[in-house]
Image (cartoon, rainbow, N blue to C red; front, side, top):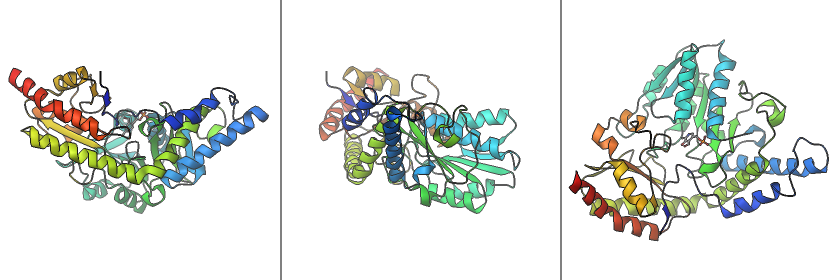
Length: 381
Ligand SMILES: Cc1ncc(COP(=O)(O)O)c(C=O)c1O
């Protein structure tokens, strides 16, 4: 059976060169980077090289890169760590209604511990109102936690403007850049964020590795306590192979970001035009321009997304309904709901997220099957 993977916002296939880079660290280079003998020294060097590769992709100093187990850990550390470190200054946090659960649930947990959180809404295109953000800042505000790009719709937030408001008002900014890094250029220096979360498996590295970028001088309380690894910012023997692969993936992303971004954007636009030309009653969710090059979020009128996903899966085509975390749980999408979609449009929303391994052939295959499947489901309903 054909297998077409169009769910690259959930995770990406590990790049062949990334696997090659990782393998020696499961075999001969097995040392602990903290060891001072030969087995540790070369491994430590490899971790430091990866740190530079990550730093180069997002334009930060390599000392600002803290390796973690992935996006969720980075976000939990960023939010809970800053809240703990700045509690004496205030107890107010600002976030948005469309954040990934890692941000949303970190904020919810802090509410139970006495923090006050303002969750800002978005407009019908998923965009944040900067005036509302600026007005929400009070003397008590210690942290703004907001994303760079949305995992469900691909909408790109005005992250630089958020960074400017935060730094002008002396508030920490934790940016969840998990879906943006590797897809669009992300420049930590000019972003004026204090912390930024990245995840390896969203950019063709392995699962279980990521980074928290911490601007020099930003105070936070580490989440994982133990040894002095990562300059006392994240304890635990490093996931060396994962980190080395993550570094390689960042190097590959940096070298190919522009042309891959353009190629994938062309695929996305062709797919959307093809769908709109052959299927009636389709609506595109999210800002038409300020969005990732690789994400389409489409509501097919009178089609239950889960049924369409099942039909596609039978043909070996993987796409998703809403975000990966809410898929299967039958929960309504918090993101689409915040954008004001009605129940029917939310239930019929499908996310197609393209990636490095997709080709024109994949598009032709999906475009050849979709109209018939949609018609079949509509006729049954
Ligand atoms: C926007 C966003 N933030 C955070 C995460 C969590 O990252 P990880 O899977 O590495 O924990 C995801 C994963 O889907 C995401 O899309």
